[in-house]
Each structure stands twice: as structure tokens, then as C-alpha cells.
Image 1 (cartoon, rainbow, N blue to C red):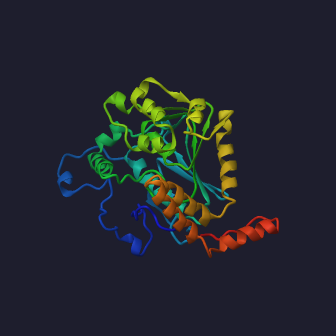
Image 2: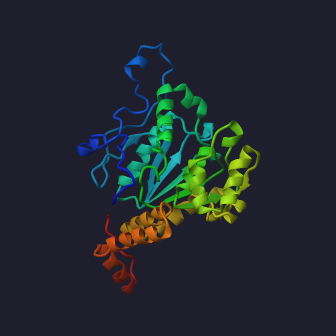
Length: 329
């Protein structure tokens, strides 16, 4: 839908031109080892990765049926759900989940029937960051993750994957460390009343960078610095997260979080998909540049909607007091 921040290769690309890696991209996936590694002593078998299977196709013709072991992809009306599904491990990201997340975001983004995407976690945790022990045990995955981190080419959140559909993060339980990526990169964030947030990076000698930088664009710098520098020794609750603008709504009782996320997503889904995508590009783009340049870029997104069928349908539906019938793209 429109231009992407970066043209990234699908984990499971459809047939045709997209089968070819984009300039500068590697054809090898994380879990594929080069010849020198094959000659070494066999290591434990890595966890299964996402792989496409035959079945239902998207409105745009791309395959959507994919076998996942670390996440779940679900659909409920116009709402697509991406659920972290390693509850026994706090939904921490292992090498397989990194692969699956990129594939899942792209699957939902390519589905024309999905207007809004909700991201949440299974069990008592939302997301607790990288499963360091597992990733470290998979040398190929560790090298690839290190390369992507160094080159700022991460591909596991909606922002990384250039998703321009609205994304709602529904935070349940614990959100820690790298889990804050998904909070920082979502468009709307709601949380259950029992959710907590903290970042333990500095407590284990690691640096807070990507997620903290983006959060500091949305919330007061001092508050984000406190989260980053206090580390694992302090957690903030949803009341404080709401005060800081990290989340926009607290859901109580906690058991109602998914119901409320679906309700909110359905409200957002009533709007023009094309207009929402252009709005996201304008507002997120403003974080990249100064006020003047952001205004000029925003004007281009605004003007780019002129002549789009939704610009005629919206006022007409309002005048006729009916729901608008938006174009699919």
C-alpha cells in the first residue's frame, strides 16, 4: 500500500519479481549456514521456522496460509491479530520468532480484507525481548541479528517492515526490554490495568537504543531516560505509563483487553484505508525531519490523496447519512 520505508524481501515471497532479493539484501535466511559451518560438529537442531503452505490467497494474490510455531495470525472481521505465542518463555523472541514476525507482519499487511492490525501476547506477558540464551546458541542467527542491529535493518516490528495499516498494541502483563520495540513502533497503545513496563538492558551491561529513541519521540525525554537508566530495579505501572503518554488507554478489568482492542480496531477500520496510510506516512515521517521539511512532506501526502475515490465517497456518505464504502487500496 503505497511506498514503503524500505523494500524488504518477504520470508515467503509470492511468485514473480518479488522472488528476487532487493539490492543489498542477502538471499540466505538467518538459519541457513554456509559451508564452513556444515563441516563443524553437528549442533542441536534449531527450532522450526515459519513456512508457507498451500491454501487460501489474499485479495492481492499473495499466499496467506503460513505455519507458525512462535506467533499466531488470526482474523476477526476487518481486524488482523498478531499474537506472540511463547507464553512459557514470557513470549521472548528466539531465532524462529524473528523469522515468523517478519512473515506475519507482511502477511497481514498484504491482506486487503484486513484494515487494522492488533498485536498482543499470549499468557501473562506481552513481550520480554530477545531470548538471549537461545539466539546465542544458534550461531547463524546470532550473526544475522548482530548484522541487522549494527546496520539498523531490524525486521520484527510493523515499523521495521513498512506496515502502513494502523497498528494497535494491546499490552497484557509484562513488557520488558526489547518488548518496548512493539510499544514504541505501534500507532495506538492500550494496556490492561495489570501491565508493567521496564527496560533491563543497562542492568546486564547492554545499551538502550532503538526502542528508547523512538519512545523519546513520543514521551518526555526525562521519563524515558529514567526507564532506561534505572533498568530492572524499577517498573512502571499502567497509570504512570498513561501519564507519560506511552499508552492512551488503561483497560480494566484486565480480562477485557482483547475485547476492547477488537472494539477499538473496528472503530478505526471504519475510516478510509488510503487516507489512514497517507496520514501514517505524514506523521511518522515528521519524526525523521524538522518542522518545515515535515510540513512539506505532509503536504505531498495530503495532495497525493486528491482524486482518490475515497475523497468523493467520504463527503457523499456523510451527506447521505450512511457508512462509507471505501476503496480497498
